[in-house]
Amino acid sequence: MSKFLSVTLLGMALFLGGTNHNTVTFAGTCASNCGRSSIEFTPGQHVRVEVFNATPRIIKVEKPYGVGQISVRARQQIRLEQGDGTEPNISVVFWDDTGRPLKAIVSKPNFGTLRVELRPSWQSPGDRSVYIRDDGRVNIL
View 1 (cartoon, one colour):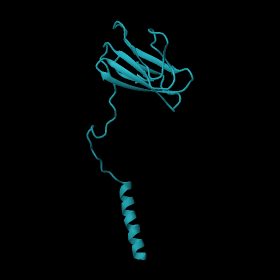
View 2: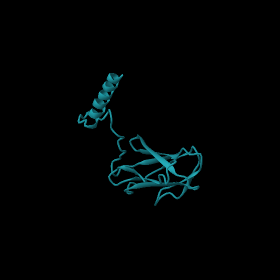
View 3: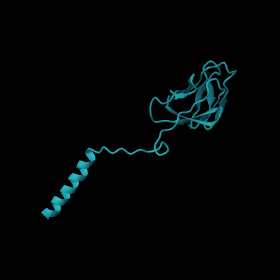
View 4: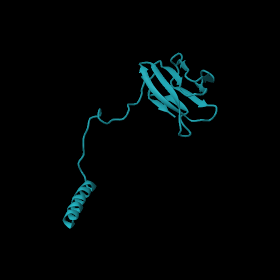
């Protein structure tokens, strides 16, 4: 019995002691473990923004300095055009009148379209806007 216990303790000590000072580094390709690439557009490119309401409620959407406040029903999709190309940045502001938080999921279905899917969120305060910067990168704020 004591022989079995000592062998078990020795094995555990070697196993646990060896993992505390592990200096081996495993290299991998980006395909094996890389984050999502950011969505980008060419600066000055004409961009169409599609907003899809995936919530069960009506939400409000507004494009500052452009379209006024728009009510978007549940499961409805709207399309916002950029304008005449002199507009350097594009931003879309959205909110739920009941104050519930929203989560914005962005995607780029084709070369000139930014799709924003708005879903319910449990994390407060949630997302409030999507902004295309001067350099073409997309930020969720």
